[in-house]
Image 1: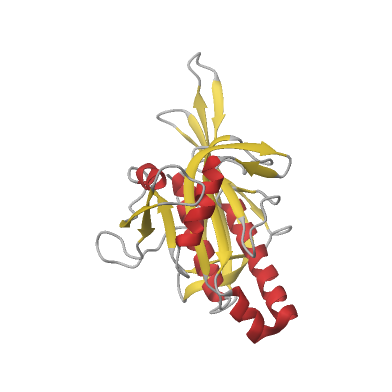
Image 2: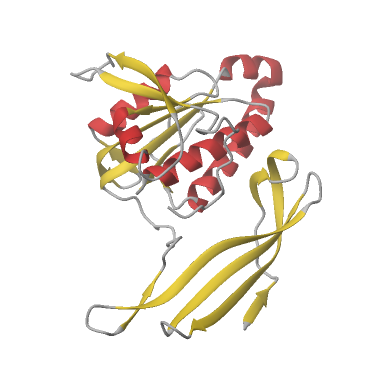
Length: 270
């Protein structure tokens, strides 16, 4: 059984499986299926999307969401979103993974493109990054303005690292490069801003990253070891301004353990 929806769908930017880099995809339709597993007597809903790449016009059918009906300890039915919970509506506080980006060589780009040209390009990229954050179940902190970049918060290292890879691809597709840094720790929210020592460390890590490089703290690397197949290279300990103890940072490698170029599925289950 199923239901097709073809209205109210948004465009988005993701790497195309056919032609490579990040392309603007047009969502043609969403299709929902639901069926009951007769052995467990549990209802399962799946949502799929039919998307078209505006670059090479490839049309693909992708799984985007799953929700199952399960049982609580008392035997009552519980609705659990196993893979992709709805994105939070407000800034979280407490323990989070912090992602910060900044456009590399912005002064040189402004010189070559002009003030208006660079502003137009950077705003377009910001819109794309904002969408990628929401797709990966993250929340932007609009009050934490850093140059031409963004600050976003995630509840898992996998979500944050996957988002970082897609953000870098989106920037390169636009002809730009990003400095990217990630750290994990407690934050305190205040209106549209978050603050705390963990935010300061993430900000310093971004300063260490080369253009198009994704640097993470040892804390994030440790969280990712059991939830991803990503590999990292030790960049050593660094004394960061305003931070009492040295922080060890790692660079996210562009190849998996088998030597293949990384391809992280959008919204891949943890």
